[in-house]
Amino acid sequence: MKQLPLKAKERVFDRKGKMPSEHYREQLFELEAKGELIVHRLTDEHKPVEIETKFGRTKRIPLQNTWHHKSCGQCGHIPGYSTTIFWLHRELGYAYCDPKEQTSCTAWNYYASSTSNPAAQAAVALRNFAQAYEDGFFPLIHCGTSYGHYKEVREQLIHHKELRDQVRRVLDKLGKPMVFPEEVVHYSEWVHVVRDQIAERQVKNFENVTVTVHPACHYHKLIAEDAIYDSELYDGQRTAVVSSVVRALGAKLADYSTWHDCCGFGFRHILVSRDFSRSFATIRKIERMKEEADPDVTLTHDTGCVTTLDKSQFAAQAHDRKIGIPVLADSQFAALAMGAHPYMVCQLHWHGVDNRPLLEKMGIDHEKAWAEFEVQAERVKSGEVEFISWEDC
Amino acid sequence: MEAIYADTKYRDVPVEEKQRLFDQVKSDMRWEETLYGCYECGICVAACPSARFYDFSPRVYAQIMAREDIHAFYELLNDSMWDCSQCFSCTRCPRQNNPGGIITIMREVAVNNGLESAKAALTAYSRIIYKIMSTGTQVAPDMLQPDFFPDWGPDVTAVSENLDIWRRMVPPETLHTTELAWDVAEKTRVELFLIWKLTGNLEMIESLDEGIFMILEEVMEELLEEHGYDIDDIDSVI
Image (tube, rainbow over all chains, first blue to last red; front, side, top):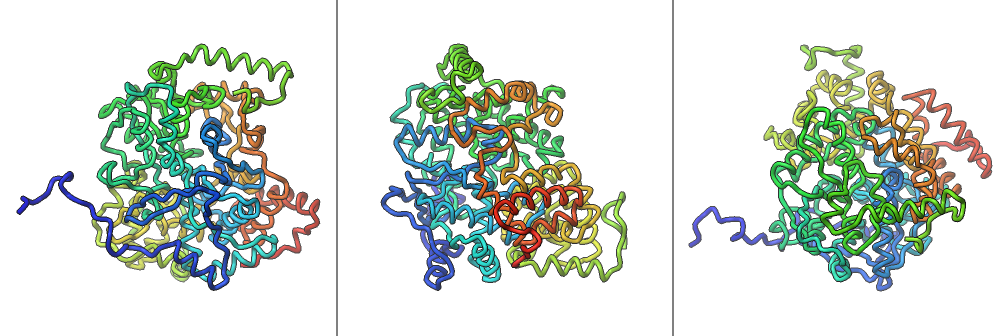
């Protein structure tokens, strides 16, 4: 008989058996059968891949023909984040739609100020989903906040007929069908699923690059059962996304004690009470990472997290804090591995913390790359071209 | 009864008013999924970022609401509620309580009832409300200005000085704009404005900030009119 308590590695975390929560997919199909809504299904055209979530259920992740639900913070302040998500799709040959007929999820405002209500939030979500359905592409969510919020909206719609009726009345006035996708999919789940394809195309050696990972709160804490877990990573005790990509690309995945802590974004705090955000990010995240792991870079998969961890470090210098870790999105990290231009594609000049030492460690000549960027900038300044295109990159 | 916070800056109200506000929170559709009973383990506090820097505790919210202490509830409604980071780390609760979710509802009640403390908490934030409601994207490249983000470092100055050129050098076509996060189609903005009117969201803003409300209404009225809608004829359907 084994001596108790068993060491973590000796325990088998069996994900079979009675699930602790209802299955959203079954509930959506039940509502569809009653004529309450249309479920936007994944079909063979999306090349869906099945993957395991927290309690062992499977989730289906589309590879192609996706409708890219963009993030306002990414597109506004970290354009390399959105750009690399598109770039990865293009390089791997997966078709997608980048719509103008998309609004923000508006959840940043919802969590910051509550100057909204469940019906408005759900109507915004379903307007976007109806648009994706009409456009013939399956939604892929770029932002962690949007993703967590849309999972919340799904829960509320499934459990509250009153809300469904309210939203239906709104959509009827817009002339839009009431549609909900079979899965709410975050782009980092897509990156997780294609990580081996990315690794096959890797041209930069990341063996000497040490990485810490910050998992976004709204990815794995909101509707916690719907997030990707893998028994071979962290013994299945933490979400596998982002970390799996680090492993696949041969970088050193380093741990630190405050991995579960929020970044300190705060939704409203990052804009108008930034003393809190930068204090928390510095003291509980960056300094802990520096002391315990000394990473070359920290990766995350959410707009707010990249913003908070990156932008908080400058002011902390005034207090002689131990800072200076570059912050990237997993998509930017993967793109660099595949040889993407650090400035034309990854747009690293929009980031706060100096990432040139990281680029040097990756074997990327950032001086040459910046010179190339400036040559292209001259083409725009002179009016030779109005915009830089994908072909120019 | 003795106040939780020694430096209360809001006015007290009759007990019936506190009860009314309390009942509004409990009658919210989302309430039934936020609180199942708290045994004060404190896991939520350990996980909470706001608890480290503010006089704030998610456990207090769970306890006060479970005990239906309407006096303490009213204090929380006017004070520490706005310290919450809405990260939902508190859902680590072994009872599956959601103190962050309780606060989301409480904030909405505060806004809907025009509480002065809500207005004060959101004063600096109101231009963001205007941006998201009028454009459909919350932050735009042209907001990266050194006077608004001086603490974000010299990269903000570099971005603002080169904004037009650098923005033209971002490959995706939809990102070729500096006033919005991405180029939102006009029809989509019309649909968004209709959602704000049909869900009573625009009227929520009036109770919060009349100035922002008037500007918003003007912007919305103009675009809706161009597309054949009279803003005064659009009533809430919720």
